[in-house]
Length: 258
Image 1 (cartoon, rainbow, N blue to C red):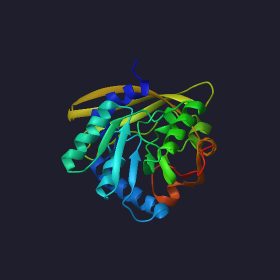
Image 2 (cartoon, rainbow, N blue to C red):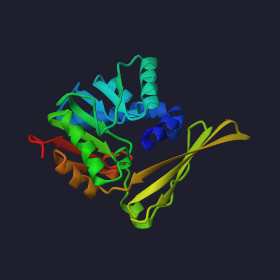
Image 3 (cartoon, rainbow, N blue to C red):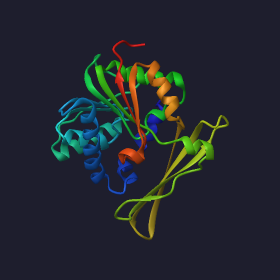
Image 4 (cartoon, rainbow, N blue to C red):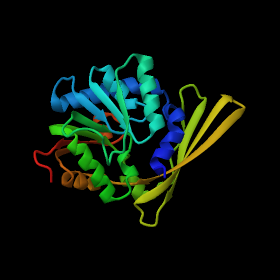
């Protein structure tokens, strides 16, 4: 049976870039941002990086443009294929693999850095599944290697039972997307409807709806699981401090796995 998260991103892969005002520009700016962030912890590169939820390549392509040796993996085969095609179109070297974060096909201590961005970890809906993924990310990092993970800031969203997101239009105005949220009774998880409108002309909009689920995990909750999954020296970088749109967790692979 197809994994529901893989199914969601398989459906979304062709149109994923429409979730950004200007995806090509985001590739460049995120590559610059994460390269600086990694250098602040590990010094000037290049370094070997696993983008463990690479999608169509938003972070992986940008990091490769800065000379890093990047491998991209993702649970969605269609997204991985697109990431590879986007890399070839730009003359970028990018190794790719279809892989679930909970069962990575890479050797122990294979990478200097593991990236897990764009709110991928909250697709894992309980502590056991999230811990399994973080232990795998720790396993493939060298001792002292760096975890870079970003999640949506759910602190206020959980208090207010946020019901969705404001529409976001692409820079050319020909696509728009937004989300509707339906909270579970536990107040910690929600089902999401991702609604995307695209137009060949202004009078003819095509509407596509896709479904997935999230755990609205808070930074404190994620930190606790990261510590028991093989990371220490944790640091949260808040949007107001670093200028990125989501809170960022930095962590170092522990000398000894717990």
